[in-house]
Length: 292
Ligand code: SF4
Ligand code: SF4
Image (cartoon, rainbow, N blue to C red; front, side, top):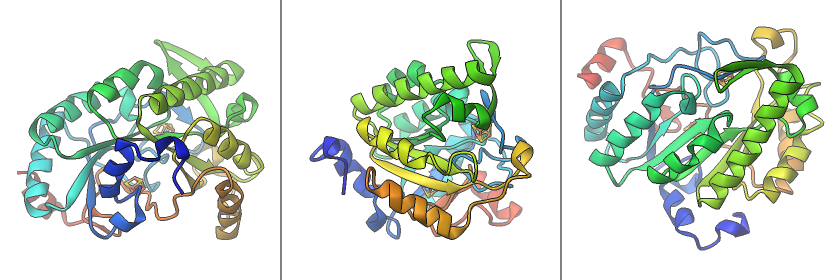
């Protein structure tokens, strides 16, 4: 049930090899996340920054950061053992768009492995400035975390943002982030990039609002939505995580507007292999061997 805007498009053909976007591809093809992006330009109240960005990754894991050169040499080695890997993604440990290393890495990857699909995740703050770069790199799929489409609700979720070298808080921060997310998503969809949104389901904060998000995203041409349960950490450690039933209910309500991704594993920023069989947690010694 793809969004009509993508029907018959080149991009749709490409995601047939993407294990996250096409459930049929998940047992056949793999992905690798290259952890080259440690910095983040915002602060989500549920995020503890010594770990990976929880917008895309399972909370409570720390991925080791690689330089672009190290990342490409790891990719080379992993591909020689796991040729079924078709997608290279940058998902952290911070916000990929807030790190120039993300672009440096993808340039290198594109040059050496032009057939791989490129994928990225972001909180969206820097997106309007980067869509041209994403197009130049021929990024196929982009995940933007949208936890609200109402700045009043966003204000409760984000404690500050850093925009053009300045720190913003409160309503101002929420307004800027909202505007930038909408502008960025619109530009990415217009450029033919398949856009997925991640929404962190936060009881009492945005649980009554997820359908508004789905409706708005569908209007904007977003391809798929992935509702992630919030894990209470940081400033939100006194809130509770949503139950499985609450998440299923949210998915069902949103499904009416935009298709739901239900097999996302919230992979680490350094995950690789098939989705269900993550190889990133192999022994340190093995990891060293793979990298060398
Ligand atoms: Fe943490 Fe990701 Fe939010 Fe940045 S965008 S504060 S890394 S959850
Ligand atoms: Fe795919 Fe989800 Fe893992 Fe990203 S976190 S690689 S979308 S399964």
